[in-house]
Image (cartoon, rainbow, N blue to C red; front, side, top):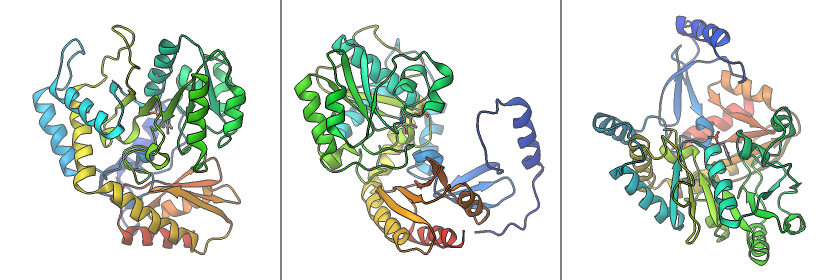
Amino acid sequence: MTENTTSQSPDHESTIKMDAKYVMQNYGRYNIVLSSGSGSVVRDVNGREYIDCVAGIAVNNIGHCHPKLVKAIRDQAEKLIHVSNLYYTVPQAKLAEQLVKVTGMSRVFFCNSGTEAVEAAMKLARATTGKADFVAVEHSFHGRTMGSLSVTYKEIYRSPFKPLVQEEKFVPYDDPDAIADAITEKTAAVIVEPIQGEGGINVPSDKYLQEVRSICDETGTLLIFDEVQTGFGRTGKWFCKEHSGVEPDIMTMAKAIGGGFPMGAIAAREGISFGKGQHAATFGGNPLACAAALASMEVIREENLIDRSKEMGDYFMNKLRNMSLDGVVDVRGRGLMIGVELDRKCADIVESCMEKGVLLNCTSEKVLRIAPPLTITKEQIDLVVDVLEQA
Ligand SMILES: *Cc1c(COP(=O)(O)O)cnc(C)c1O
């Protein structure tokens, strides 16, 4: 890492000032202005480098500005950036085929973000069942628009925006009986993350998803997996559902799907599909986004990033379990979706690691979330753990 010897670029102060003046202040931001990146490293406008264990929140799975992704976006941008879904495009059809292959589902619908994917999944569940209600779990995070917000657990996210789509009953995570009790004849679907991300990297017990699947089958309830954060190699499989062998009826994807290019999608099993006119998105599946997603999936395959995620994740978690940092309660995760739970709030550690050249994120107040690009090297992991030990 380069030491902080460079003087501050004029862009640093002016950008922060402009943000303060012109951008709604809904984000709590750190005092750095990022301007470039490659692989697992990002640079700020002062030329300082950071190992990026945030990766845009589990987005940059193939690393920053991967040359294949950059080339695919550039090539497609020269040909066609956007057309309406009134017409077919080659990249959209090709990406749909690829997604059906890797998800094992039957068909896909394209949108532009995680929350939109959850909205689409909820609408599809309602349209399919003719029922209105959803069962969600405690500490869930499914997004910030009205529908997805109503299945998102945190009261502070929801309370200013009531009434929502439905006043949910949230039941404890990793408790199949609680889901069985919550399902009524009005329930359209159960929605769960196969590993909870924002909720603190919570890994359920092995049988949980299987039992939830059985309950849904017995009661004729649809099962939605929100794989927005767990998808595209993050947990050491293409999708986290593969660890359990359980197939949902509908699954959501976003974050890493486009390698950093904004995109979302849902996939559903045979027999579950929107009919003509039932749903739409102007930008959904536009050629530029699809070209980016195709390139990103190709890099994941060519560079064997799925296996790498597992290997580096195991290496990382092992080092974290043996590091000398006071107050570590638990180290958990799968692949490179890792949580380090502390006995105190982790904001100070995040700040101190940033000063030492490592970006980390804190979720659920006491959990350090570690979700670097799947391209991270052992040397970089060693450096991150060194920095954590000094924090
Ligand atoms: C991030 C996230 C979302 C929301 O995605 P956005 O693109 O921010 O709307 C939904 N579900 C899960 C599990 C997520 O991690």
